[in-house]
Amino acid sequence: MTEDVQAPPPSQVTVWDELEIWAKDFSPWQKLTLAWAVRYGVLTAEQIEQIYSVFLHGFGLGNEPSPKLEIPATITGKASGLASQKPRLLRIRDVSGVNALTPSAELVFSP
Image (cartoon, rainbow, N blue to C red; front, side, top):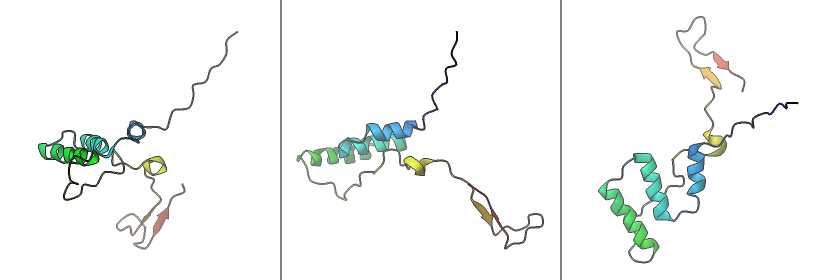
């Protein structure tokens, strides 16, 4: 006797979501390092110096960087959760030069 085995539904978690989860408890200098590495690919000498100043300040070994560096809220710079879903076309308005549509026409699409 054979059984039909159904595969579980595909996960909605992306590699970007996994990075955010992994870095959730990182210290500020670690978040900054990872965020810049992900966003820029290669860190410049200036960025490394800035990260190092955040590191030193975090351990009480240096002054706060001036100007103060903003530690990114997300590693990837991408929205997470529902906001990270693909955009949807909801409506088109102010159309001109398309068939018989008037400039004031509005095309509304259902979700």
